[in-house]
Image (cartoon, rainbow, N blue to C red):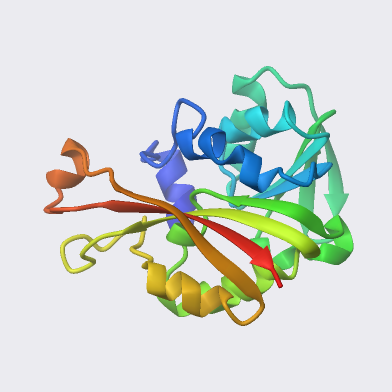
Length: 214
């Protein structure tokens, strides 16, 4: 059992929000400016953001490693689904939401086609530093020529908390994406709360980026 499967089995999913992410609502116009018919959500878990996005576009496509997360999403939101086989992955299908169950790196744009909108709320911060370039390169491979990514990171003193979620700085995002994309910082704010203060943190910065293919 890997790290994420054990966390879901033990219900250690503090990263899951019981509401739609405020940044998605606040910056949705930037993400959906060109009225994309589909949105891609990597490492989606059972986020309610999928439901919100499905009301603002025709189709939402997610990918998630943990079976329990995918099943819980459909059951908890009373969404009927069918399961299809897709190479090394399973695809949970409903009318407006599809989630591929399996390794993100086993999914490719030949299967999904390209997207003009990608939403990353809790994905890149779940990736260890040594694998982030591989993750970003793969993520960009799903992005269409006029595509946009709304991406949210956390930044803190990694010496005081090891993660996940991992600390990903503004400078690292610029370095990872700038070769083929423009990177615009939309907002930074300190969201430190009691839970993370008890872990020894003195600040927890949340950065919101709009990334566009150039």
